[in-house]
Length: 611
Image 1 (cartoon, rainbow, N blue to C red):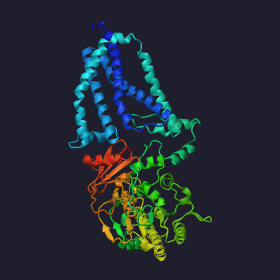
Image 2 (tube, rainbow, N blue to C red):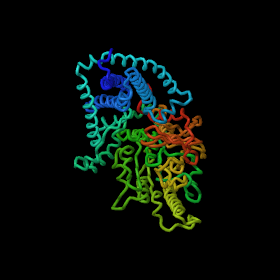
Image 3 (cartoon, one colour):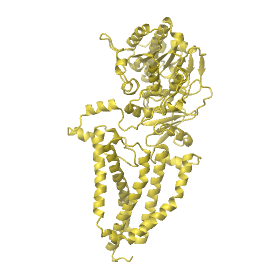
Image 4 (tube, rainbow, N blue to C red):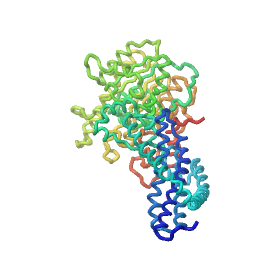
């Protein structure tokens, strides 16, 4: 078609008009490709959730493509008034954008992540993985995308005058604008009211950052922050996905062994405290038990308890909180008629217990405070001893005791001579106080063991002693103290002592995980017949055939893959950092990508079970 004007202004005006319509048809194409995100995401169950999905689908892809036009093609229109060259630039930009979008949909379908440094590493690596093979096939369609973009560019240029005369540009722009703005306004409301059918869609689309305005609403009296925090704690994370736990209904061979089960969780006890100087009673107990010397918690905070009871990585904790599914282990024990006795030295103060693990808060809190006596480890054990004396031999029982004296190591009074450090600097004194607190708890553990023996229930009881996480005293030289600051062995490695009736004492030196305890109990105590991967990410500790190359840890923010050589930490956006055995950052190291794929797949398996 011949231009109606030859002036610079006429050429630029027509190129801008062409750019608008070229972008519009690319918006439609992007929306069609974007349906892959919808198919791979959880379908909202409410009408409002579905309305938000439709509005954000239209508004978000409209904004993405138009923003690309404004940032690239619009300014170039003033620099390159040649319509052929300008259209070629538009075709190249469109081809690149659609190719990247296709790659992103493939990443989302494969590992539930959008494009990030980690995903690009997977794409560009030379490893022969299934994901790489699929992505290589995608590049075959690049010439087809280029050809389609070329045909679209030519058709829009030839039909530009006819399209412009229909006067539909403004109504279409209004539709996209209204969808974009209204989706963000709806999300502001949903975020303030913890409306999960909408907030769960937060990361469905690439480069999606829905608006929130809690601070603004609180400032103007539209949001009660305390009530918001209360609702958030009671509901768990509002953006979690719906979990399928277990993946399949479980089947059992028989009614199991009817052993009693006792779990003692010492809060904040790291593995190297299991020594004759600091914990002589537990050491003596370990010699007659199975001692797992390289055992790792599921996380560096209270999420470790989640892994202990569910056998799942911490990334599933928010979904479990939202769904309300009890641990398969505890629900099976309850169905088998076990009496429950739950005791805590701090009255189960962490909300995780009531949000996920113990679905009946009164069962836990009723044992913690009597006659105005404040909760303490001593009181918890005294209550447990009373409860134990009331149990009869005909009914099996499950007991859980949480001891938290170790976490109060800074409150230690005068240190005994055996723990006084050679150099009395602050770091050495803190470490000495910590050792002293573990020595104190060791005496409490001796009381528990003696009570079981005197009640003649020791030989009929499975006893598990472990911790939720370790504690660091800056051994990594990263100014890390306590826990929940890194994923070094000082914060993750904890003791695991299992005394099992008729099992030969042993010392196990290979790596094990909190995730392994549930399948061990389900198979060896409760006689489950279903495979462990239907209800757990762990393996049976008593299965000699099992060989694992890595352990999984972390929480909803980060996942951690631990091997003998390195620790890889991946955040929820797919960015990763690699650390050596001493937990020093190695910027030149790259994780084995097939290993990353296995870890990432494990974190979505209970959302998308195999058929």
